Length: 191
Image (cartoon, rainbow, N blue to C red; front, side, top):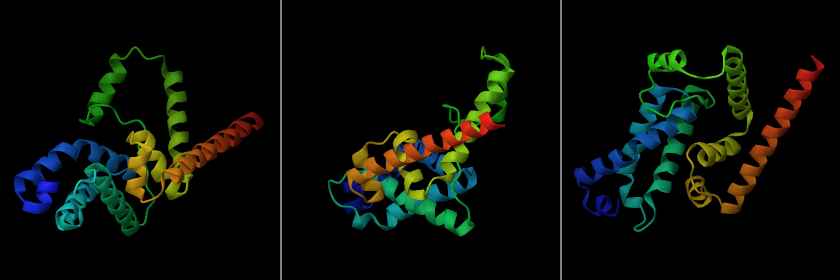
């Protein structure tokens, strides 16, 4: 990034895009819950990298700077379409994303059975809905930590907050999810 900042060579830009495209796209797809919107935000993110390259601080880690731009672009995109982020917690490790491969996996799978699959699906649905109910600040922090596997320091840089705030937001998010789980379990018992 230092070289691209100073020289503006298209080869350096292409290398940055290539290096971060899969990881960043997965983050955006999970955060936005919409592949088309994720494509647009991905492109806007790298457009911003290009346009704001002069603002990049020499020697600063690039990844947190990139994720900060991507997160801001995602929030702006959601604001424009008037929705809150949704995420798929059942994305497969492969990036093909084809429904056919998911069906084949189910047919050939040695997984427990339809009841266990139904329970797992309900659990995923509950987690997805519960995460969607979190305030944006907690949701962003939780996703960057657990779904993108970023370090506290990187999350702090991306969200422009102190590391202690990252830790407290993660604690608060997990506590709220536990409270929701407790309310969900007590509702199940009373039914």
